[in-house]
Amino acid sequence: MNKKQQKGFTLIELVVVIVILGILAATALPKFVDISTEAKIAALSGVVGAVQSASAVNYGTRKAAPAKGSPVANCSDAATVLQGGLPTGYTVTGAVIAPDVTVACVITQTSGGATSSANMTGIT
Image (tube, rainbow, N blue to C red; front, top):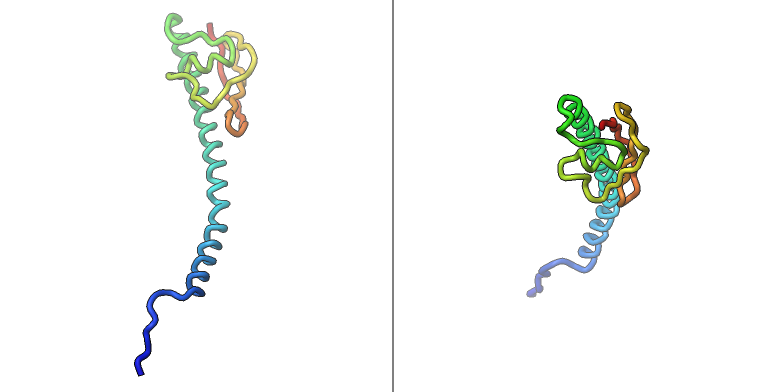
């Protein structure tokens, strides 16, 4: 008696594999959502650090050589102290800064609305 040998997968085997892949995808998806949130927070922290560092370097430069650097009279001057300006997707708000006074300026990420503060020191 000659029996025909089966080749390939049965429908049940294919359904089981698809179900297992679906379960794996459902458990992995929340990890990717959390990573994007953490990435946005890290990017905001990087911009805040850059603004604070640029403000400190600018302050020291203006104190040593008043003709160099940029005057800082309010928080929106953060764009002038950063080489290349403030990255797109961020805004800076805050008060007027008196000379030799340090003020916390609020930096907002426009996509998501996360905020953080950067210290800037006023100088004329």
